[in-house]
Image 1 (cartoon, rainbow, N blue to C red):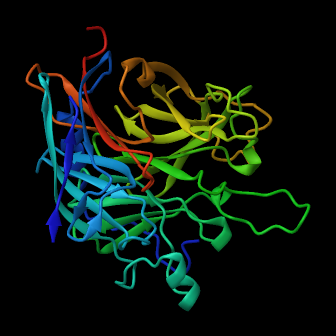
Image 2 (cartoon, rainbow, N blue to C red; image 1 turned 45 degrees about the horizontal axis):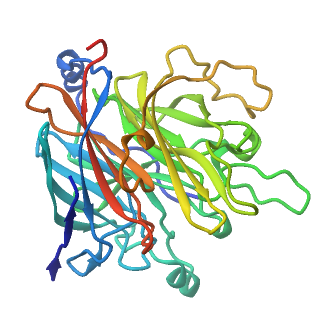
Length: 396
């Protein structure tokens, strides 16, 4: 069954981790030679589209869209769902988006693909895992087309309660498992007894972002928040550090960089929750990135407000902290960043939980375009929105 309803509003364990690449060096050079370097100046809002929360495609509920990407060769968009195989098997959607400088007119789901585990089975949900203790319960957050092969790469945040580490995996366009990259040892879950210092990733604050360099030679990931050993998470009074990791095509970890996450931009209600972290990254070139910082602040009545900013980050002068066990000593140069856009300044009727960012097609004025997507958490009080932007080059 296909039914799409739109609202238009203006511990990898026992697995091989060598990447499945069979790309000639000459092809890499070709990509680099003809790649015009992109720059980012001003972002101009084009328009918005939404999926209603009851949107169904091929008997799957469309929601939890936590990552997005675009293939300029096929003109296909992909969006990954962070459904933990509860409503339907872990999956990604393909879509067509229609927008240009004069507006954002439509978005249409065109396909859905289930991700497979290395043994060819679907990823289990928590109930299935508890029953047979097989596989890994997914928590997918980011997805990218591989610029050099007909495949996709995706990340999962892991689950400390289930002793699952975050992971990075490659899949065919049909969802078949192809290979994986290892994550840094410092990111991994380390069981601790009462009173011992916790190590590794924080639950639900792990591999939130990923991006290939435009020439495809490097793959980058970003943690949503700080590792336990790297200090506290952001508060209203102070910021924190998350780690950006750089891989080469063979899956070797070349470097890690400390990205400074802002303090929480608003005070929550008494006894209520608030956070701020990196929800996605997108390479501009091989050393600059657009970074999404997403903050959710709970009011006294329990409702949430989202504060979303896009920064341009530069690792060029940052210290490689790969061999630092902790960032608490502060003996390093962090990633530099500049604010590109505060989305709260757009005056949208609702700004939701933006988690995905991707380059789109060239606009008729010759500018790059950018598309963002929100994760509605399958929550009736939230929305799935897509926002399109015109990206003028720096200096114009």
